[in-house]
Amino acid sequence: MANESNDVYKTRGQWAGHLGFILAATGSAIGLGNIWKFPYITGVYGGGAFVIVYLACVLLVGLPLMMAELMIGRRAQCNPVGAFQKLHRKGSLWQLTGWLGVVSGFLILSYYSVVAGWSMAYIFKALSGFSGSAEQIVGQFDILQNSAGTSFLWHSFFMLLCIGIVIGGIQKGIERWSRILMPSLFLILLALMFYGLFATDGGTAALSFLFKPDFSKLSAEGVLSALGHAFFTLSLGMGAMITYGSYMKKDRSILKDAITVSFLDTLIALMAGIAIFALVFQYGTEPNAGPGLIFATLPVLFAETGPWISVPFFILLSFAALTSGISLLEVVVSYFIDQRNWKRSTATLVLGGAIWFFGMLSAVAVWKVPVNILGENQGFFAFFDVLTTNYMLPLGGLLTCLFIAWRMKDKDRIGEFGSSGKLYSVLKFVLRFITPIALLMVLLHGLELLPFMDYGP
Ligand code: PHE
Image 1 (cartoon, protein in one colour):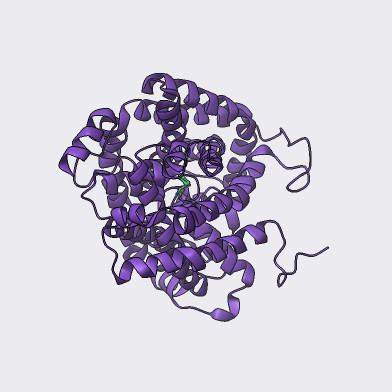
Image 2 (cartoon, helix red, strand yellow):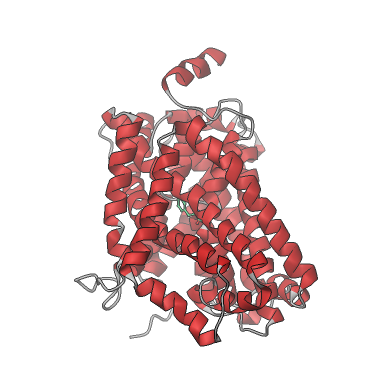
């Protein structure tokens, strides 16, 4: 076994320290999804009951799928496309799942980077202080969104950071930066949460909004969103965990590490929820503002709290986005390194550059998708978001799940899981039946094909 790892180590990058994988994988998982999306969808779907359903989804869908991806990645020791070929056979159609992941990574990063750019722009807005009437502050977000030049500039800056880190490789790039960014992120969030809990009058209201379930507020729509969000937030369905798993050492327990990563991801989302809703309730604002909660509603409240709270908040958001951005880029880059034998520097520059260029479509808000496929007159930003989150990721997750549960050899699965006992049987059962059914429902819902839902005319 030791020899096997040493051989692999010579040819392929591997996480160095004990915590290397945990920090990098939580870095991928914790992102805009936790700090921007989770609080706003919780607000929209009514709080406590949504949170409970979300927790159940992380346990039943997220965790098993994360283990599945890590097992595939570590077994195959390569990028998602190569992994499906290696574990099945060359030319196997399963490699399309890997392809779907690489393309999803490319598309997600192209618009993710635009939002990440906004959060960096907001660090500077926060530094100079939010002032003026509520309308004026909210209006700033519209101005930023619609100013193609500024959005593109910040998007470029974010992509440059991602490229700079990924080019350094697994240990000297991704792991090193995760070691710095993740603990800083945690400390900032801890401080903001304590501020929300003890220095504002909104703390108690925030806790009861998040943790006191009122099931009458829960809709079928809410349940499906919780399901969809559970695997977006854990970076599943596109091969990010296959890729990160391929750099994992053989002696790490996939079960334990996947639990740790899912737990930390959930913890951070809940902490962000507390910090944000405490402010929202302190100033008597409605929690259901939607996507503008962070960039429009919060700045109005930050005008009261001052830069001591707002600056760290947007730094937190930017750090979270950066560690996710690098994992998206790594998936694409690792394909070109493994399958096409490109040098890391070439692959990172060329693909990072291509994503940057393609991201222009999302940065320029006035450009619309020429054909109305996923909604009328949509901008590219919304189009790529819906395309990836509602269709490509659930499909990728579903195929990955079917592959590991029905196609991968028992020997390979057990080899990675580490035992064939009761827990293994439970995992196999969940991956065979529960997770695929749940993912199929998310997918059918995205296609507006679920028989018991009312999709209107
Ligand atoms: N998990 C990240 C977030 O919560 C997004 C992401 C999705 C990153 C897929 C990598 C892969 O923001």
